[in-house]
Each structure stands twice: as structure tokens, then as C-alpha cells.
Length: 139
Ligand code: HEM
Image 1 (cartoon, rainbow, N blue to C red):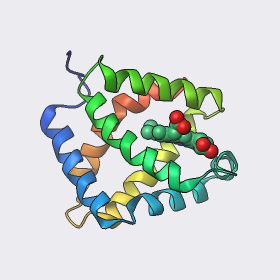
Image 2 (image 1 turned 90 degrees about the vertical axis):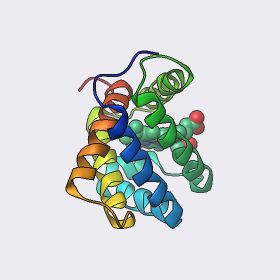
Image 3 (image 1 turned 60 degrees about the horizontal axis):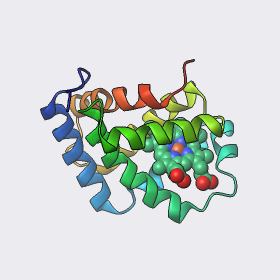
Image 4 (image 1 turned 90 degrees about the horizontal axis):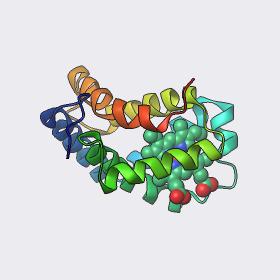
């Protein structure tokens, strides 16, 4: 598999460790959706009628999937990202909503990972920028 130039292996590993500490808390994904849906009325609107128990499980899986895909430009994790990209395009998710998404995720991580630092925030951003670029439609 080809390495993605956006993030090196160590950066992705530090982000994965941080995500692991966040998930262990048990309230990370709840807090993320609280921040994300409150951040923009358009985002809240898209999630009207969502089964959040299912949604939270799927997000947890897809976050790890994104970190696997972050180091690659092909393979199953990459294919899943392409599928998710199409899904989100079809329901009208816009480019700016992905910025809101990442900021809410990082705010939740800062609250939940006791080892969080500004450097670690840079790791999260570097690790997720490639997958987000792939998922977000052109502005
Ligand atoms: C890289 C960032 C994101 C990831 C990893 C992600 C992940 C997911 C996943 C795994 C699903 C379930 C897909 C399925 O049912 O097959 C989903 C659904 C959804 N996502 Fe995202 N998402 C992201 C960004 C966003 C953004 C920016 C929005 C903007 C509002 C959004 C809104 C939604 C909505 C509305 C659904 C459908 C919920 C329902 O079933 O009612 N997502 N997302």
C-alpha cells in the first residue's frame, strides 16, 4: 500500500492512542455529537430523526477506519471512506460542515484525553486532513 504524504506513521499512532483514551472514557462520542449538532443549525437539521445509538457505534468504527485509511491511498479502509464520502454527498453535507465536524471532534478530545496537548491537536489535524479532504466535497 502507498503511504499518504499527509501524515507519517508516528503521527497517526499518537492520534490512535489519543482516540483510544477518549473512547475509554465512555462519554467522548456523546460529547462530540452534543458539540457538533449544537455548532450549526444546518448540522442539527441533518440529524433530525437519527438513531443516535446506532450513529455513535458507526462513528466509533469509522474514526478508527479513518486512521487506517490515513496512511494509505488504497485498500478496504480507503474504499469505505469513498463509500462514506458518497453517502455524505448524497445527503447534502457541505465542505464547511467538515470543518465544524473536525473542530467539534478536537474539542471533545481535548476534554476527554487527559494527555491532550497543542502538539497532539496538530497530530489529530494532520492525521485526519487526508481522509477529510477525500470525504468533503469541493467548496
Ligand atoms: C469525516 C467525517 C465524518 C465521518 C467519519 C462520518 C461518519 C458517518 C458514518 C459512519 C455514518 C453512517 C453511514 C451509514 O449509515 O452507512 C454517518 C452518517 C451520517 N453523517 Fe457523518 N461522518 C462525518 C462527517 C459528517 C458531517 C460533516 C456531517 C454534517 C452534518 C455528517 C452528517 C451525517 C448524517 C446526517 C448521517 C446520517 C444519520 C442518519 O442515519 O440519520 N457527517 N456519518
